[in-house]
Image 1 (cartoon, rainbow, N blue to C red):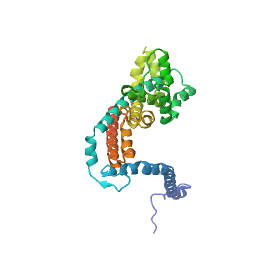
Image 2 (cartoon, rainbow, N blue to C red; image 1 turned 45 degrees about the horizontal axis):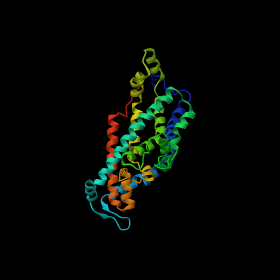
Image 3 (tube, rainbow, N blue to C red; image 1 turned 60 degrees about the vertical axis):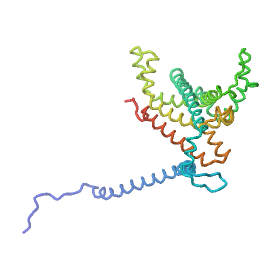
Image 4 (cartoon, rainbow, N blue to C red; image 1 turned 180 degrees about the vertical axis):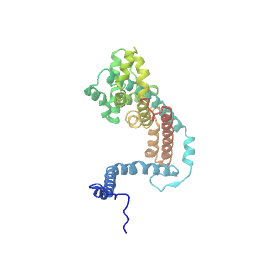
Length: 321
């Protein structure tokens, strides 16, 4: 006797079996596509990664090792432990070079940041001409060596056109690069002239991200331009300004080429910045171990300053809701 089932037999809708069979194949295809994208990404990243390993990571590790050795390039490195660091702590020229570098950084960053911020605001509020932005960026396209040589000729005490104009106005000639008082501020202002346009364009890009609705609402409420700058522009520009400050501080501590072509550390070590002292120790006196120790110290100082700046300026946060 046959007992009939109370429930009707379940059937897949038309094409259901085919769809069910195709799903695993689709997943495999997606996995394969992801792997293909990963391989393509690795191909594009490989040159930059190779450059990082060869020109950044390996020299850094090699420099850290050499900082614990006595090495003059002609004989094998001799392990001396912390002797180079003890010498560095007791070296008055090192501390003087560090102080000179800090003086340069303060002048350069202070003037450059204020000037770049003013230029960026003017570019945004008055005109957004691409030609004007190109003109602003022009000095940055010049190398530091060329910029240093041009200003060396302009500011020459006897023949420079700058001092010729000062003399024509009835004032005494100023030894901009030959006087201990004037040398570091002059070098700082030369580099401000070269980099301020690039910094201004970075800040200008940050200003472009601020919605115009906020300024329009502030104008309706009767806010002045100065009040809008402090209440809207500065708070919303803070993350970009923080990143720009971190970049410019790191670059300023590494000043070398402008000093090399204008004053060569003089007069009387007044412009003997830390990078120039490291270069002289390594390639002038062949004290590569000691030069490496000072380089490691500079790396530690820059790392600490960067972390402190990042936290104090809250660079990773934005006030844009």
